[in-house]
Length: 301
Image 1: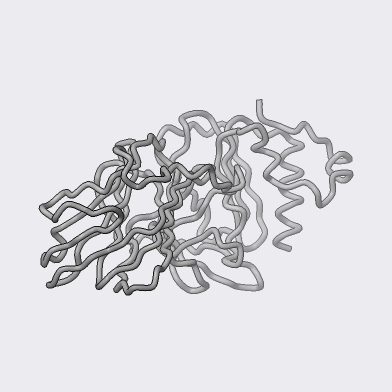
Image 2: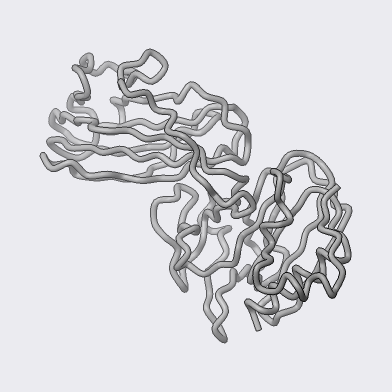
């Protein structure tokens, strides 16, 4: 059962050392935004996780802090020619040579792709780092569990290697995530892949794939918060179960709800203007609520 069992005197003893991370110790399922200060580097303008969120623009991805957003081991093999990882020539390109991908003169038709070959549960995310050089333009894409693609970058490559970083959340039916490259030139282009890193980001992450449905990051009275214009959602996929959820709004009001049955994607925007939000499987105790309220009100006075 979730709960620290803290009395008010115990909370006072814990003081500033306590944080909501304690509610998820031992791997308790849930989601915790950890506030919306962009300086922490956990929010991005689109669900592709490539461009950091900034005040006044929309937010498409918030990484979960319930498990610290720690990065797992690199699942990419040392050799990029490993069978499950090889760049598959999907649409008629010449065969790859070593780490070089060759594109003929077809824009958005010729594609090399990589299926990571691993199972990524719904709501989980991977960080992809790819170092590239080349002789012209290309399009780096993310591939969802259902096979749909998201544009990550559209670089014009040169002979100098450049690293590109993206975060992909598995938010569709299907278990695989991957990435690939489209040709973007009317003339042949060669792309050299120097290094690939694919690591799971711990936790379950909140995203919005539709631009018009994303909340706006706003700074007012010294508090960063997400603003929902009434048509916005930011969804997280949690393991089915019964949860407690809590949030603090831009005026400092804390709301705690228990016994919330969740079996589908959940919108974490619980107020029009929200400074932080969390979900934890199980039932928060009275002591948990006191500790959480004190911690939030200390952060958002």
